Length: 323
Ligand code: SAM
Ligand code: SF4
Image (cartoon, rainbow, N blue to C red; front, top):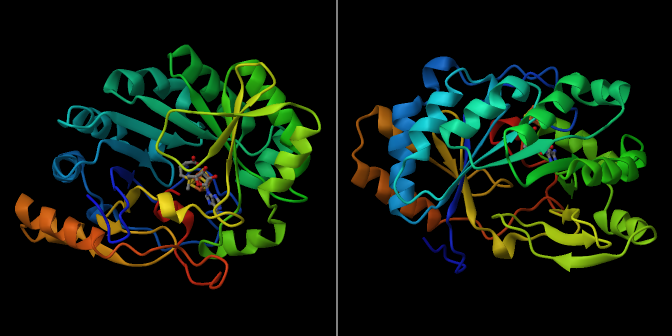
């Protein structure tokens, strides 16, 4: 699929729940109540059908995300159903790892190929203040993922001034010691949590500059579908990446679309244009109808987000679409 700006769309991020066992301050506010009701959730057979239509249109990578995908009870069933869709080469998962200790092996067996794990702090008190969760479970989840043979495992750290920016160096050491890839992410003004986090915004060029005082960073390639700029750290195996949606947006190379748990297809994380594939499905749409609706959506994919000029525009929390 090509959009009007010539971008090749081959990556679908699939939110399998908008719920989460954490409440990261920049993502899902504690006051949030507007969750999708279970009757609206798409089950494994419907997801498989929709993903098969996407795959027939050239989508080769699906990422399971959320909310927290591991709180969805049918996650194993969903992963198994999607892993065998013809044409799909990658089935990856983004998780906070709180429940990964027991799920890593079953997910690998179900066909999940790669893992991204959120980790914003290595200090148990700071971690709890930031996420509402317990660091010890996340660390156990990371170890379980390594033991299950996932490689590379990418760690995502949203860097915030006065919150966790003092932990950047500790996170580099942790990832080097554990054989993990580390990606720093800038906050995005999505939902009220994301908008409030803007006061802690750190342009990542600042972090890069600081790290160059300690390490030699040489440009490196990394397998994946994302917008991170990667560097090799000294002569070690460690790769670090920078994801800069605000200070240096990467909309020109956007290759993805996103679907919510109730089947709304969003053409851009920073816009509200969408195609209601879930309701079409419930109303008896054929695969040809779904295909036509997806193509029509991609034909209207917005050129770029407007985080800088309209920072209050997106009211849905990041947990609704999974980043
Ligand atoms: N629960 C899973 C997790 O935390 O990895 C998957 C969903 S989470 C919404 C996906 C990613 O979005 C995480 O890396 C998280 O840190 C990031 N994220 C959430 N809100 C954000 C915001 N306002 N700005 C930047 N990144 C954000
Ligand atoms: Fe949950 Fe992930 Fe959002 Fe944190 S970032 S609240 S773990 S969905």
